[in-house]
Length: 190
Image (cartoon, rainbow, N blue to C red):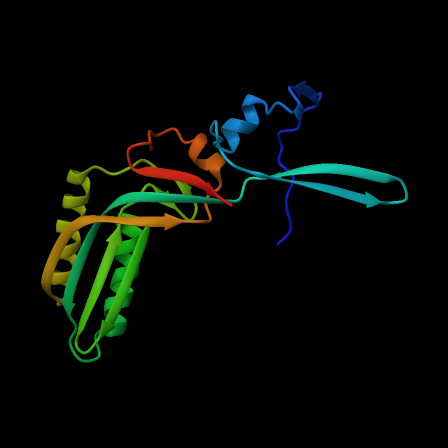
């Protein structure tokens, strides 16, 4: 995959600090990429001849990694013969209604486990973190739906999962209108 140029562009001047040369990163870029003081990076010198010679410095930050502590609801379900496809279709409807950030499914041998993660980070962006009470209410409604569709719920367990995200753009977190600092931690890994 190729690099895409960011919309924030600025002109600056190289300054001297002791025996080193220094470039200032404007606030817009530091907020957009969630940069922190003391963060490590790698600088590459780049050049090309087309026909004039051009030079560039690439400041490589690494991989943006987010760890999210998200509430979850795990259901262990007895699946009657031939009911696996019906259960998967029901889980799709449940996903569309209750909007979990992830649904993990394991089935076989007459039993299935469905775990619904109710995180703030999704494949499509960031949304409001859900409270414990909201997840409990959703889990009760999901259990009722499963039972009313003829499935036996053997176990319902509420808890938390630590989910690692490596596809999140830092701008989606920095621009989120919700307070996420209590449910996520991020870092740049070189």
